[in-house]
Length: 188
View 1 (cartoon, rainbow, N blue to C red):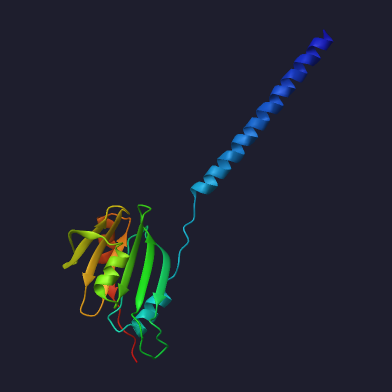
View 2: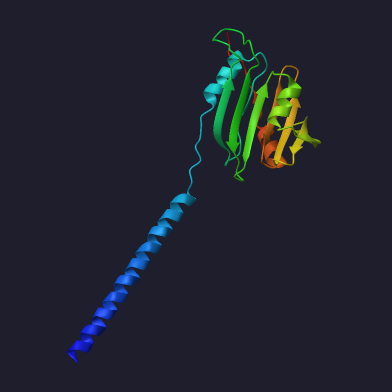
């Protein structure tokens, strides 16, 4: 009788060890999945680029202000046109500012004094005209590249071209366009 009890005890112990190992594997997998679910989107502070643009651009600079919660700035690239501090640019001045939207899509603001048609074709990915959007009383031309799923809003001013583009919906692009505010040039 005692040998049967030992066999039952060792069988139970074996099951307990296997069950414990399975529980440990499930726990580790849960922690890994949770860690990946909380993916961190890198953010950038674009204040310095916005200020520099306002100082060197031969046009009225714009920057987004007061975007709703959930808009995350992810990239900022300023091309100064070869201008040195206090000097005039020899090439077009261009700024591209990228965002992750609240809907986890990409949207970007582009501004430049480059040739408008070439600039629009480049940043809209050769998007075709797709109607209009009115944002804060200004009419923006819609462009759409169906192959890439790229939407754009285009506004031509007297001295620069503004484009808001990305895989975001027109509504999200309109939100970004509506947040663009003219920047006051610094006192010289």
